[in-house]
Length: 241
Image 1 (spheres, rainbow, N blue to C red):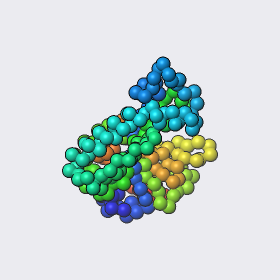
Image 2: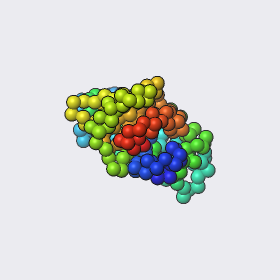
Image 3: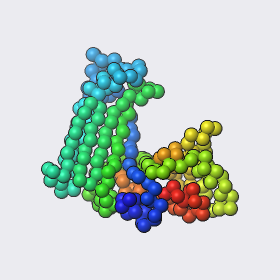
Image 4: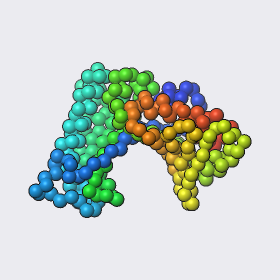
């Protein structure tokens, strides 16, 4: 996979990863959206199809404005021509597609607190590692993303990952620790001295960072996390990356 080799060198273990996405999440009060009229609308008290459709109308102005702004900024910064990019808008969703990457937006009500909405931005479909190194590209997404998500092509047993970390008693210098629920449906790995954590679901690896950053910042921080895994002699842990 050329993109990951560009991020990580020529490590052959990169071939087990089928995809990478950068994700940023933010939320806000439904009543703060420009489409919300205090004299006409009520704040949702549940998250369902009807209230989600209501949210789609309320967030239309914000979504269209932000997506159009990135369209114009990307067009200028990356010297794109008309055929190089397109913007598609749908209720509570938008997709900017360029020759080098794509960005998706989605708005949804928070099920646990339907008076608030969540906005998710996803950068994916990166065509080459060189794009990430461009100042013009990186500057488009300052403080946008908090999470890197990798899809594992072959998958991995979560129990095997847990056992591998707990079996590192002969490699204490790596500073790897693991936490997990009783059903082992997932586990969270931490590296001593690194703020990011790695959530393994068996299908994906989600590298969560405490602060939002640009693509280049997240990938640079990610290298410190990965280093602890590839240095171990355990095939299960080294093979994740």
